[in-house]
Amino acid sequence: MVLALVDLLERPPADRGAHAVLFVIAYLCLALALALVQNLKWIGELPIPLPLDLAALAVFLLLTHTVVAFWFVYLFVALSAGIHWGTRRSVVLAGIVTFALLVRTALNGPLAWEQMISWIALSTGTFAAGAGMAFLGSRQRRHASEQGFLAHITGLLEVERGMAESLRLILTELVNTFECEEAVLAVRDADIDRIFVWRLRAGDDSRLTPENLPTTRSDGFLLDHPDASVCWNHLGGSGDGFGWNRTDGRRMKDLPRLPGPMREELGWKSVMGVTLELAGQPVGRLMLGNGRRRFLSQDLQWLERIVRHLGPPLQNLFLLRHIRAHAIEGERSRISREIHDGILQTLLSVDIQLDVLRRKVPSDPEQAVGGLASLQQTVRNETDELRRMVTDMRPLRVQSADLVDLMRGFGERFRNESGLGLDLLIDAVELQIPDRICRDLFQIYRESLHNVKKHAHASHVVVKLWQNESQVVLVVDDNGEGFSFAGRFTGDELDRLRLGPISIKERTRSVGGVLTVESTPAHGARLTVEVPLG
Image (cartoon, rainbow, N blue to C red; front, side, top):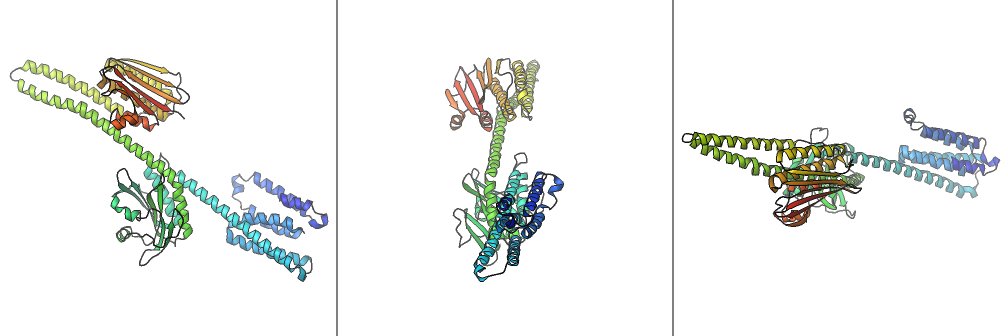
């Protein structure tokens, strides 16, 4: 409208048309007013803008004598129509406007043969420009819709929801979007050499549990061609399908197909599938089966874009699941070792001693009574140790404001129970540490002191905690017997040598920290954990 107004003002009054300038100014003011209040809900729901633009275009065609000013308004309306209506209806609108412009031009003056070329150029240019703007508007609408869908479907991948619920929501969206009966996501886990398959049927809102299959099934779910994007609208006989290589976009003449047994197992008559890539490697496939309508090439392209967009967040989700599985495995191993080396061995010893005392009761009851008292004390000690283990296994919420108090409280209890000297040196009045780091840092501190108590045979422990702008550092230094090795090693080096406290190494990695262990046999050990805050 501003450009149309500029063009009108640059022309003599006779060439502008009656009231054309006033009309443009009034419409421009109305448009600005609508733009200012468009965020109001009741305004946004009223279908005012496009019908008003169409009416303004018709009035302006009657008022103005200049085609240039009319074109500015016309091209904007064509763009708006393309956004709201799509290409087909907007092209029809371009044809109607072109015809109306020709009629108005014919009414304003007689038609001469020497003007035919100008008429043809005017009509062709008007229609082509309107159709082109409508196409751009339609593409803009489609792009905005696709970006909104990608943002929505990515938002479904949340750690708090968990993998099962996140994948269920995503597969449900895909089933509804592509109007099919079933969606299948198959992912190969190279670490354990298995294939995990999540299947969801339309309308199923139950918990999604993956099938754990051997890699011999990979030819079925992965189609034995990791780079193929394939669609079969009919799987029977010679079939009816199309596809291409996802790496170069070339059409494939020999399309991979679902194996017969798998086709019968799934009950699919049509299928569309694309490759899932994680960390730059094809690791799985997303397939949609039994479409309620015929799949088109643009459907396969759109599914490719969706899966490509989902790759990084899915990789993060699988990586987190992998880390959690390793953390759980490490924690179970630690608990298993503690039970085996501690309580279980004690119970076996108690059993043997009870058998000996049972035989001594008839011949030497006083010695048997003394032995029973000793065993009773042993059982009490192991009960306290078991109670400590159960307490440590409870979920613990540690926040930055509570970390110092928790560490001091546990340190006091450690002094009373172990009889060891403990110096807790915290070089910060107020720690500013993320809660997720606080929790694991406290667990490392607590487990380090337990290890000193059980294995180090130390008499004194010094714990230091400090923080700077880039990292937080925890140091546990004892004067005990040290580890079975001598020297200074990082967590990765300890892994290669199969040495060091496993659970502490796992907890340090889970918060992105670096573990260093210094050991001097018969002279103590020092454990240092450095966690970046950036």
